[in-house]
Amino acid sequence: MNAVSKVYGKGQGAVAALREVSAGIPRGTFTAVMGPSGSGKSTFLHCAAGLDVPSSGSVRLGDTELANLGESELTELRRRRVGFVFQAFNLVPALDVVENVTLPLRLSGTRVDQGWLAEILRRVGLEGRAGHRPAQLSGGQQQRVAIARALVTRPEVVFGDEPTGALDTMTARDVLRLLREVVDGMGQTVVMVTHDPLAASYADTVLFLADGRIVDSMTAPTPEKVAERMTGLGAWK
Ligand SMILES: Nc1ncnc2c1ncn2[C@@H]1O[C@H](COP(=O)(O)OP(=O)(O)OP(=O)(O)O)[C@@H](O)[C@H]1O
Image 1 (cartoon, rainbow, N blue to C red):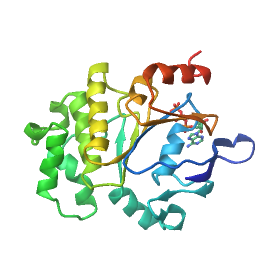
Image 2: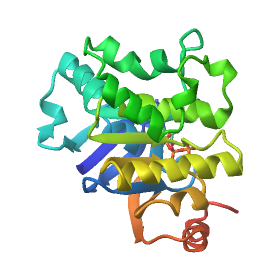
Image 3: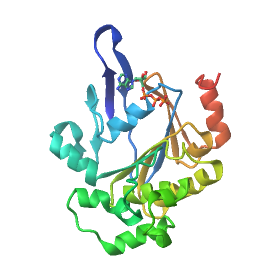
Image 4: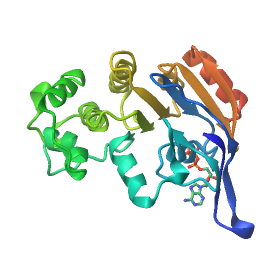
């Protein structure tokens, strides 16, 4: 993205959530986005994923300039070219694992590639759970379903908004290892917002936001280095 600004509201009550943010995220890498509460992390993710429209600046996915797309083309892009994983897994309770995972394909009228479906279920460790409903699964397993659903369309980027935020430490670690494997084993691109330095340490690069700007980036992050940088940003007083 290039010089992206996002202002919510108008006049006196206007809030600048992003201020001329430029960032390039290379294909096949794992990026974590950190920063104090209200620094613009979710807005960054939503603008990068085409869920929200910047007030100014431009966002490109591959060779596609998002500003050039109409509403229906953007919907199409969100369905086919990006995947999402949220803190609250957002699974459909009445559907079983396979139905939840294949939902994006059915919504866009795309045939289910059974070989690819089996491969994804195997990779996320759910091959024995295909007929289970979300309520019959643990939190970690539910997030695995959400990750499988995000991968089923073979998207160019998987975006995560606090994907481990609702999980206990051990389960979160499994999900982070899976995201790492999604990058290393499948060549996917993952961009994840997190509050957790340990989660961020699984990424290749950490981008630090403060007050709507990228103020730093870190490669080869460790939990300690990330925590130290966050303390420097006044995140934990
Ligand atoms: N829909 C909205 N309308 C008005 N202001 C908004 C809206 N969404 C976000 N904001 C404001 O924009 C700023 C950035 O919000 P954003 O949610 O991107 O931050 P964040 O870093 O993700 O925060 P958190 O860690 O608390 O989730 C905040 O000041 C927030 O109050």
